[in-house]
Length: 268
Image (cartoon, rainbow, N blue to C red; front, side, top):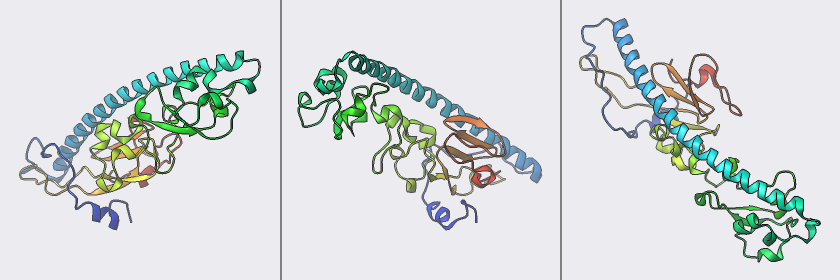
C-alpha cells in the first residue's frame, strides 16, 4: 500500500488545504486526445513546479545568509573565549565572570563569579547572537574548552532535544513554499526542522482536472515523506534534497537522511 493510498492519507485529505487561488489550466482540454491532454497538464504542472522551486531557492538564500551571519558572530565569540583560556596561567583559578563572553551569556541563578570555568554542572546560558534562540543548558567546562568551546546549540544547528523547537531559521516556517504545503496533521511549521528525516504529511498537489474547463475537479490528497527529501507531487519528479532544490529521476537523498527512491514518490 502506498503512502498516498494509506488510511492515514485518505483520512487527512478531507481537510481543505490552504490555497491562494484556484488551480486552473490556461486552456480547456476539450477536443484533445488523451495523450495531448496529458501533455498539456504535464506542462502546466511542470511550470508551477519551476515557480515553486524558484520560491524555495529564494527563501533558502535568505536563510543561508542569516545562518552564515550567526556563524560569523559565533566564531568571533569562540575566538574571544579561546584567547582568555589560552592566556590564563591556571584555569582552575578562573571563574565564569572572568570570561566576558561567558559572563554576557550567563543566565543561571548562581552568581557567575562563584562558578569556575571548569565546573561540570549544567548551567543556564542565553544566546546573545540571536535573542529568539532563548536559553540552553551546558556545563561551564564545555563552554571553556581550550580546543573548541561549545556555543548556542541553535546557532550551531544541533538537533533539538525532545519537546524543543528548532531555530526558526532552520524550521519549515523559514521556507514559505514548504510551509504552505505542510499538512495540518503534521504540526506547526515552526515545530519541524527542514533538515529532519522523520516523515510528515504534505499536500498532494495534482488534483483531477475537468477536460471541458481545465479547472480543478476535486481536492488534493495527502502524502507522507521526510522533510529533508521533500517530494513535490506534481507532473515531474521534483525534490528538495539537503536544502537545495534539484530535479531528476531515480534515487535521491540528502546527507544524513534516507534515500527514498521510487518509494518516496507520490506520482511519477
